[in-house]
Amino acid sequence: LVAAISKSSVPRQDMILDEILQAFQGRLDVPMPASWSTTYDFLLSADSKAIRDKADRIAIIFGDQRLLPRMRAKLMEPAATEADRRQALEVILRGRDPEAAIAIIATLDYPALQSEAIRALANYTEDSIPSELLSRYPNWDSEAQRDAIGTLTSRPQFAMRLMQAVDQKRV
Image (cartoon, rainbow, N blue to C red):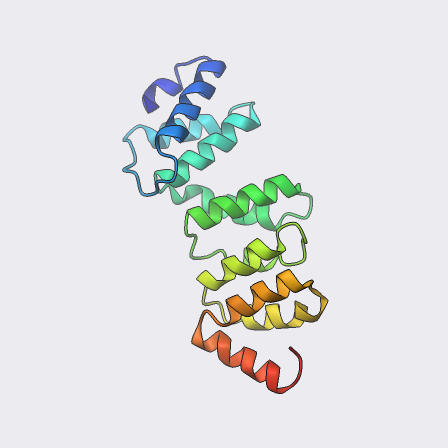
């Protein structure tokens, strides 16, 4: 089926991609078909943004890590739309990108993604995370502050930094 995509019309490509997404909804680490690499490269050159976006979502299902650097860049791109940033964050999280902490930190100043980004940082061990959260904490609303406390208590080294901030009356 994957190999047939590049030989299909655009509407049929869209339909096949929808069917693949539906079939594997909620799954990760599905074995990558042998023809996926070539098909993915083909889909990335499509004129349709919808097709490219679906191809990215399928790439994560197949464990294709090639898109993660591009998603990190999109997350940090100042001109990116909120929808593009949201999709990039979703792909990064579903793909369990081990190098994404810095890109996720860059989204902390975008209110629409703030809580999701704060919670996502609980999955990373980057040393700068507690400082980044604590420096922004006073300016956040109560929901973001609650999320920050949750993230800061998720790892012992983060919790130590939180306790220091509490002792210093910064939190």
